[in-house]
Image (tube, rainbow, N blue to C red; front, side, top):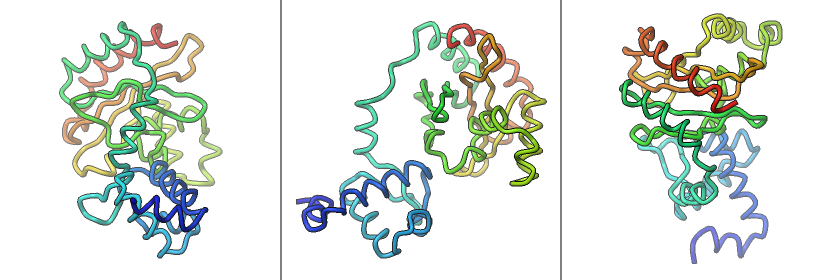
Length: 236
């Protein structure tokens, strides 16, 4: 009998607690620590550690290479594949594939909806580290920053984080978002919006590449914007 099953037999609420921890790891993203989970959920540290260890034992979670944090494991990935959204239409995939053939880096197509952001066509050669929906905070992702810039005005942000408010204003002016990677030092990502006929944000293209290349984004921006124009009528 596995650790999680044994614990569930002894403690009826243990399964619910384990699922809550699993959901928190998904929301926070790769690298979240036991202490962060304990603080966020209001769990005693010993309980958080015990549940995390059981989930690792049963392969629902894995430890990060530095042994400090956790990420979703093999079994979660397998479950996600069973309920993965349908692939985008072939015409959409052809546009994205052409971009991938012209730009060295990871190019992901994302869709925006009422719940946030989801990757609908991940680059098979450069798998995204975490889904945007489960990123620790939208402001730590270029794709998330596009959404924040769309939904939140300067006046609302100034009282919370003036620096972020300025960054969101810049995104609205320049028409793209940039964010250094929080999980891979020396890398960063760009995100270009895709809008419908009414001008609303419906999707986006994300490029992940070494920061040294993204620091001079003019060439990338031209290609990504061209792709965004082709994709707009296909995704609206």
